[in-house]
Image 1 (spheres, rainbow over the protein chains, first blue to last red):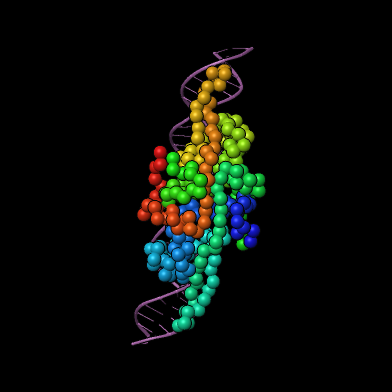
Image 2 (cartoon, helix red, strand yellow):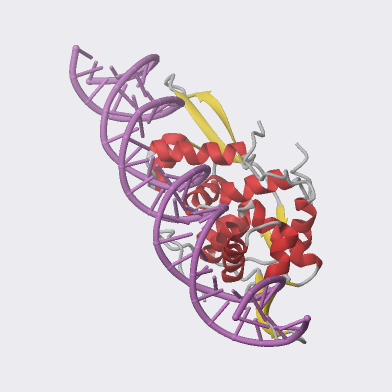
Length: 115
Length: 115
DNA sequence: GGCACGCGTCAAGAAAAGCTGACACATGCC
DNA sequence: GGCATGTGTCAGCTTTTCTTGACGCGTGCC
């Protein structure tokens, strides 16, 4: 994973994906909540007051941008629970860093698969 | 303008606007082009190969987020030309900076007017 | 006048993102 | 069994964003 470096400069397509992932009030709040503590989906849905299907969608967007990770765990009473936590990402937005990122930006600008 | 400070932390609503402004391949390229040199609309449209109405829209989005500025100038032959240039913005994206931004994020998350 | 070049805006369609209400599956407990 | 909890997905709607092709205005030059 080349993006967790300090002083992150990164590929244009990836940067675009990160920007898209953060460009939503719900997703900002989700990141904030997970930065406080890891959590599983249903509880996170209750705390953030987001419906589960919607939260699910937002989490996937964050995960596919590499901003959060998930793992399926078994609770003591045998329930399967998906825990999410933030990755320690670090991005810098300046005119120069953006200029650099555009050098490795696919011509079409279409959203591509990363995982 | 409280956002040009070094080590920018900023209001959640404003951050959201910046993220929205940068979340587009065209707009990234526009910022990159303007970071190289200020330019006027028609020429920028030719160089970036974006139609003028579309470029106009993108520029407004960038400008309303405070990432570029414009000024109307008169060329030697009397034509009115609108020049755009980037502002020296600096934003940092980390779990913590986002957590902080969400504290000043309007409940609804609806896009508001800044100017 | 006619053409080239600037500026801007509008309507309308196409595409993407956001959101909801179902539905499916599993487990443990009374 | 019935209910609570957890997981996930799907179709379909609404809203936003993106994009194009007209228009309108102005100037200078031949």
